[in-house]
Length: 264
Image (cartoon, rainbow, N blue to C red; front, side, top):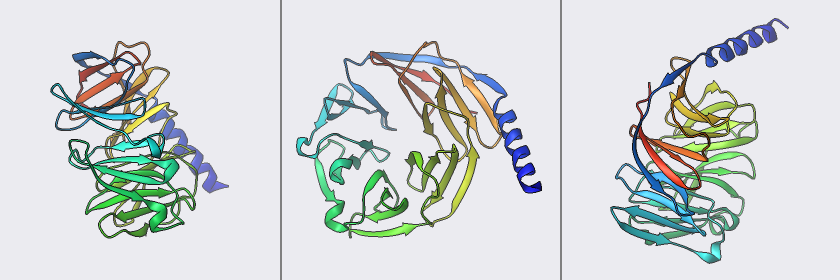
């Protein structure tokens, strides 16, 4: 009973801290019409990525490259954190496509051809010629070496249902149904980073920061200072957002606007 009491007090304090919002100013840089495309975001080299009619495209300084693979069905996700080696994932066929920087196909990997027990629902680029894979069959996080087609389990299976995942070269992040935010590194070390507020869209920046939207308002959560900052944008409604290198992209079904934003 005493343990539960202290847990309640801890969670209450977390909620009180998260509720103390400050404001972050933005500066509008550019605005562009989308023309019925889904905007995925941009990379560190200045390329923009889109999906339209299930065709993946890359735009850079007036040039456009496209990739489509009709037999594999709908594109589930795209990972471009390495712009020279882009991952397109087709969950319905358990298949990963690796593309070069001009969207030429380098490698096609059907995971069922390697291991019949792997049912991937999330894919991301990791370090050392590896992919992060979340196996929905047993809720296990894996590292897959795509040069020698070998898997290894990382950590234990997750305990709760996962509603969001994201990854970088060194960490796989997830948020469960209780809004607990976790990270696991390539060595299998798991950290509970925070219990976060309710959200509609979200982007994890690193182990210290994430952005999330709620009721058409955008926020930055700083996990070190335990503070939430409201981000000033004039859009009354927006679909998604993307942040990298102090540039915030806000996009609706009609346009994308880029803002200068420095996170605390």
